[in-house]
Length: 219
Image 1 (cartoon, one colour):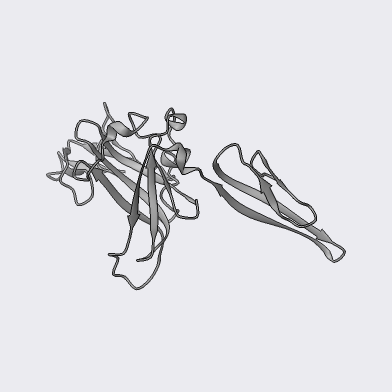
Image 2 (cartoon, rainbow, N blue to C red):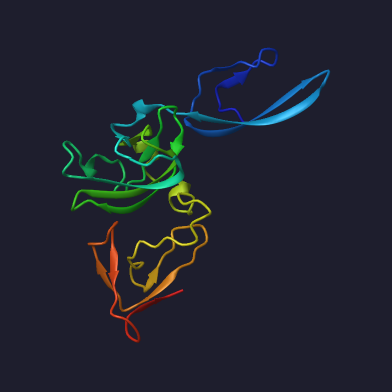
């Protein structure tokens, strides 16, 4: 149950075959039954065709010097004009909706875009890497008009951050308001009182505050 269109399963051998008509991630329910009983298992299936993207860039984590694997690690990715051949005009969307990240097996990584600056040719994104170590390799893809109209759900609903993050703020107010949005699914937004935007933070934007009673953040 739940196979991608174009695929079928042989009920005798269990072999899945065919030509899928649409890429994506699928939760497939397998029901196995014989004279000894019945069992149900869920299979995660990813279908990915890199040829539908005009551009790609590989990332490796060989410089990671830690000795342990980090799970659901939010990795900061920055792409800009210092990278030969990179240009945000290569995206099919003016806000980066067609950006995708996949590992070598075709598993899609959730992400959130923090900055998509066409004028400055700069993209900053947080990518949730399921298992991060010095062997980790994944690839960014973009330039696909078919997925340019809307962003992927996980990039705007907080799923790029796991449940252990109770608040993630990128320190720039929502335009026309004093609200600093929480990127996690908990939606613990902050109210900014007279803070000043700065682009010199350790990771992305920052706020400059001079202390109460005039400058502070409140939850």
